[in-house]
Image 1 (cartoon, rainbow, N blue to C red):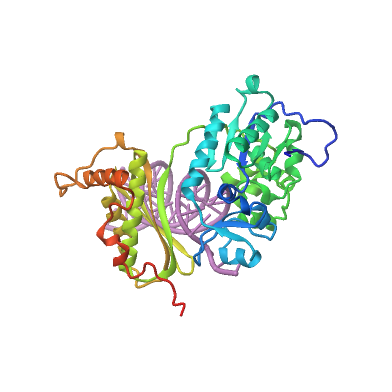
Image 2: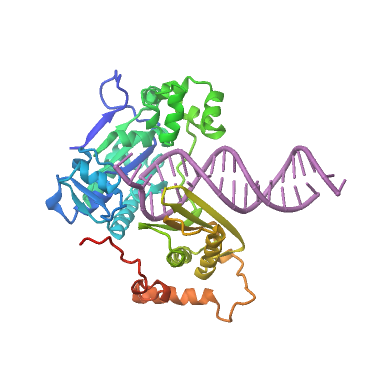
Length: 418
DNA sequence: TCTGGGGTCCTTTTGCCC
DNA sequence: TCTGGGGCAAAAGGACCC
């Protein structure tokens, strides 16, 4: 059954850990996408399964623990994952399914406490300080959450229980899979100090390299390094932040509502592309997608950013800020296209393009800009009409003539297999 | 081994105004 | 007229997370 773990390696007291003051839970689904996909494939339970695309440039979205045992990790290129674990079954992602399960899981969270901060589809912080009277100790609430999600959705999750967000997040990671880890307030510092620097949230490959160059390998090493030294190596903000965290100081509260800062879409092509006409059609498709999502969310934005990644993986961005916020497909496309043309590329080999809109405001409060050449029923009204048609007849119902795939020599464009 | 797609946040650079 | 620099916002790049 479930495993409940204790925090410090040098645990002296026996019995259950003292969870008083540990009012923050970090709940993280175990191998979320893979677990959800297996709900329809009980025959594959207990076998290595990888969720991800199968085209040449796909990466692993999620993998069962049986596949992870072979060294497969998420974000790893599929080609490499298949070499590591040739017996694995590969399942295609089912994003709508994951979103639906996620919604149900979050509904369960909300029935336990209103203070839920989602980090992604499959993980959230819960502040349970207001639920203690009704539901018991934090550890009991953690087990309640786990039991309900298993019962209602048929998937397992792991929970970290701690006085701060940061420690709760670390704890859930160590509790995986299918466990609970409590870090009592009194044990936070020794718990942190034994960890390698790479375990810290926010320390990735580059930062870890910088720290290693300073001879810092554990969180204890960071804690005993003067703050200015860290700040010189990592930057003012990051250095100070890391030093605070190394002593378990993390004042961040659980914030139930966080507004979106940007909406974007990008696409990596199966093969590098050097045809400007193809890139322009892609920009139209991506602009359409972004604008549609903005309108669905009731948002408009002023800054349009174009992203281009070249064959050698170097990436550039170019941005333009408009006089007024927009959610109009045509205008986002026109801006992205201008930015692209201004690059003056001469058949450069491109592997990805993306369009993103930021500086978001509520569309209700956004001034509607009247373009001088705008016809009486402008692009805005056309967009609305298209949205309605798509809602009624499906997403494929309406599309720009330029985007019809039959008109596109690149789609689908597989290498000759003969 | 060859790197997706959705984001956030921070730092540095650049351009403009005074 | 030329130059310097402070202050600010926007742009660009990059690290990081799931």
